[in-house]
Length: 325
Image 1 (spheres, rainbow, N blue to C red):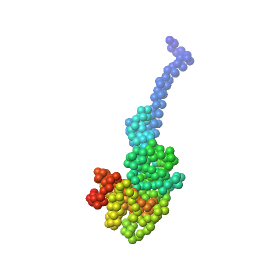
Image 2 (cartoon, rainbow, N blue to C red):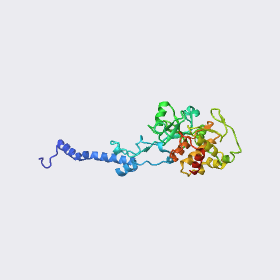
Image 3 (cartoon, rainbow, N blue to C red):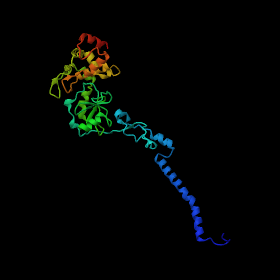
Image 4 (tube, rainbow, N blue to C red):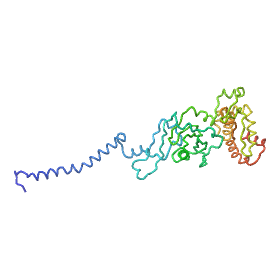
């Protein structure tokens, strides 16, 4: 024990200073952790509990352009916006994040690859790979139908395998470039969109019997709108003759040339018949004949296969059934 009044040795003073500084050294990690936590909370928007941060990270805030997106703009391959950090190790799927397409462009380097000679929008709109009716696209290079637009879809693989990059969604008529996934806005595509879904103004319908013009298809075939031929689907001549007769009834024709007249109808027979009438009277058609394939499919389903392509039927009997349906 040192005596009173005696000075402490330098070694003892150094030991006491080290003892006093030990609590500060032990508390340093806690202060650093608190600082890191505060920085993370500031980055997340001013603080808040981890539960709130996790809940907010699992939400996808809709943008002003979300109304313009379709089903294929949502892709399971992009989960960063909704997969919380705590669940990254478990790879838990908590939803589907929007795969925002690139901004629409008026220039596409692949527009020259479009082949209008092979485009035919008269056939049933089903995927040639999966036979699905959902989200069907037409390749504007080869004319084939494929489903989907997201990564891993038939359209996506078709684009990569065959270098066919321009597609059109058959429900909306919007044209996209794949796999870059941007919408193409170009005035040269108006004729293709019009052939997919012909539309007419009220003044055009009123003058359709007065202003008669010859038209020419892209193959050089001349035709008069309204008098084009209908392809015979094996034994469907009885359907063709009835349809041709009904297209000559002015009141019936004028009604179906304006889609807004029957837009609220849920009958697929009404919708398919209206589409066929509009294609028959289309002055900008690519060819001088139309295939009633989609109308025949609706007739076959609604009649419980009473009217089929492999058997003849009486046209008068079919006309009675069609008008009553």
